[in-house]
Amino acid sequence: QWSLLTKRDAPVGDSAAALLAVFVRSVVRSTLGDDAFIICLLGDTLRDPFSFGVVRHIAEQLDSAMSEVPDGTKVRFVTDCTPGGASEIFVRHCGDGSRVWNLLPVGQQSSFGRGIDINAGADPKERMAILGLIGDVYITVEGGPGVSQEARAAFER
Image (cartoon, rainbow, N blue to C red; front, top):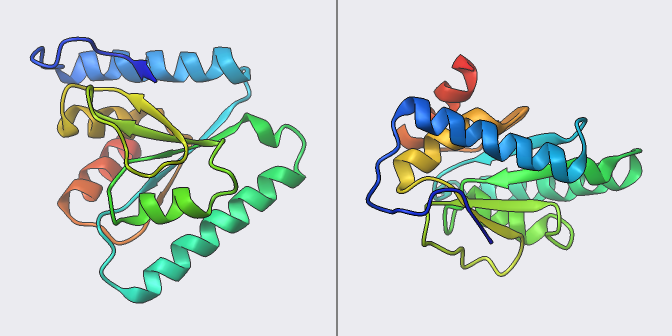
């Protein structure tokens, strides 16, 4: 488990969140190579039963596709780690979970039992800002104001 911020009570401003995001991306690149690719999945607790099947299908198809392409091992899926949400369904159906990173505020752990937990940001708001800055592609499923903010941060980048 990686900790990118060690003090929970030290708020991270927008510029500090951007620096942390640069650090996360550099860790990914140094671990997987400069051509690593980050796909972020955003979504709140799923309310529409149809969405569960959609997210499951997306996870299975993306994992299968990455297994068949050259350098598919350089792809990482990063979730916003919402219990009962799109993230949990995605993690449970994305192969063995080895390509999935669960982005959480410092001191928190996912209850998914799969993927690698990565701590970034002192609280959910900072984690959200960082998530909006690290991906190459973003997939959203359902969601409210929080998902909207993450998507907006990604779009503005």
